[in-house]
Image (cartoon, rainbow, N blue to C red; front, side, top):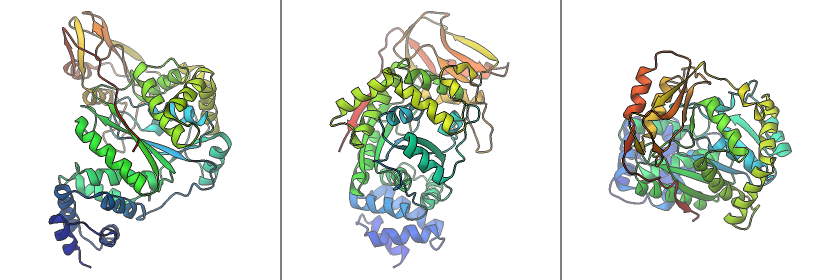
Length: 433
């Protein structure tokens, strides 16, 4: 078998066999196939697409390129959730204890984040003493005992994907549905999930800017999951403005605690209940999405979800008292209000750029070696569709520096106020097939 023949076959729009895809992924991972041929393959795929079977075969070839986590010792159906990212995306912090409170195992592998704020692990490390450096056996034991634990990602999960993604990033082939879908799904499958729930974001703060592209990606990933034996569902949610009100590590953790109490922002609560219902349904703990949602609301209202969060934090060395005393979390020295310069209705809060403003305060990383300031960030006092008076606070800046003029300018430039406007829809579509 020759790589040039495979490239030409895909260039001409023909369907590749499983053997041909396996040959490419194995050869590229071990260095037998050079970057220039892999680039040609990626570009041919970009223009000619792949059918369902090819996408499933590409995903499983990438899964097989490295470690596959065995979670078979964990009792029950392991349902994992993946979000395609966004600003103020606090869902995992709420979803994990909420779903675990219904005796559904949540065995979560998370990483540290590059970008606007830290990843899930960074946010959890706002809690003094919390750590993810636990052995796999302890991880399994905690999930079996209390249904929830988080561990850092293994270094050798889907190495083919890491290598191919880095190449796509510099060859103009990132925005390819089969390559994006197989990249995301390979990681989730390699991490040991039995079933997968996907939150595909759309809007100016998302990777997929248009609803049409987001829907295409969501359908592609659901098809891959179902074709390789993982029950998969997805939703398409709005990321044209930040989710919830908090952007920043300890600030988002405080918001997660409020949401678990049933006192969180309306949009974050709605998103968590929608995704959580799919997780509960796929775990076979409810006969319908409606019943699943009711069960989640019940554990939110009776305090079981919050108690599960306390147990989870304590199990991994964290101070569980933060659940009752959020002031124990890191707090910034200064709180500065950003007053509105005009009266009207907020029609736009460009999520990506507001996220950048948070990163400028120190809430996120530009490079993997940057240190995060866990205490800083932004809290939105107004959102799209809200009326505002001149001089009224649009948001509160939590900072440890005194010169924040550049941050204020960035924020003003990306919040639009007009005479009329409406609230955007949060959930655009629910995809169950």
